[in-house]
Length: 92
Image (cartoon, rainbow, N blue to C red; front, side, top):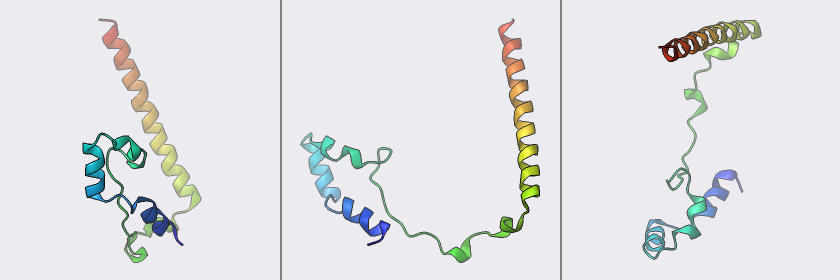
């Protein structure tokens, strides 16, 4: 049995009507642990692999490291500027 089927089986015995009745009777806490972010989970099929954008797969390790370095550099600069702005505002 695959993971999708196991997941569906774990949630199959509580349909919308049963969940509504449990909520009305004040027994919602019996299934509250199964909610994910206040919503009942849904299982959907993954997209076809032919639709995935594979263009970055050919990027070399050096190219990826350079991109990370540039991104981190600008993030640190932005963080330092923000810190300076906070200190400047506090001094007023």
